[in-house]
Structures are given as C-alpha cells and as structure tokens.
Image (cartoon, rainbow, N blue to C red):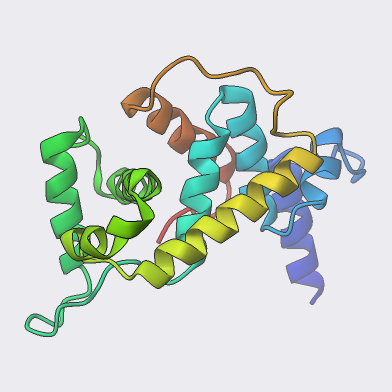
Length: 192
C-alpha cells in the first residue's frame, strides 16, 4: 500500500498535478474534478491548450467502452474490424503513414466523426459498412457528451475557448495524440 501511494504521488508530480512540495497545482485542481484517470485529465488539459480538446475527448470516449468493431465469425480474429477500418481510412484520409499505436487512435477518431455525420435513419447501413456495433457508438457519443460537459465545468472547454479554424485532418489529430503523449511520461501510453 505504501509503495502504491508513493508511485501515485510520483505520477501526479510527473504530470504536473502536484508541485515539488506535494501540494495540488492549478492543473491538479482542474483535473481532480474530472472522473477520469489523472493522466487522461492532464492530457485533456493539454489538448485544450493545443486546440484539439474535442478530438482527444472523442478518442477517450471511444477507448472507454467496448471495442466498437464486430468480430467476424468466419475468422475469429478480433483485429479484423480494425484492419478493415484502417484500410478504408488509408483510402480516404492521410493516415497511411501513422505508426500502429497512432493509427488505432486515428481510426477511432475518424470512425466517430463519420458516425456523427451520419443521418440517424442511415446508421444501420453505416454500421454494416464499417462492421461496428451501434451500441458501442451510441455509448461513446454519450460518454463524449458527458466528458465535454465536465470539461466545460472544469474550465477546460466550452464556448469560452478559442474557436478552431483549422479543419479536421492529420494536423489536429497529431496534436491530440501529442497532447496524450506529452503527459504520458513515466506512465503507460494512452491506448488499447
């Protein structure tokens, strides 16, 4: 128990939530109000500063639930859905050069954004095209909305934030991944 507490304090200091005296910092106070792991809270705070909060909140929401991809009975391979989605993404986005860890996050982000743009009456066909569980997508949508509301209350998001003018693309996706990596430091990277 003592060693675990010490590791937790070291991690909180490493992400900037505690100062050298062990006191809560301004960042620590903001992320303490969020019902997420401290590293993810710090990543979300960094994303707010980098102008990619919505992207990282989307990735966090997609990672918080079940794997959205349907496992095909013929292969039994749980990565089939990921492989198909990554191939489809490579055809439509500039995501082909991302490494495997980044590509998973980029796939989730693109998948959610495509889902969000789909008319409600067409989600069944959309789910078949992408081989995903609609239940997982609806859950991610709900988690994302809750997370963005909490981030606004914590002073990290909402209408007071500067409006983004850059369209979604590799640049904003890369900044979202960079925000997550910036606080990962001494801990395990964010991801599946």
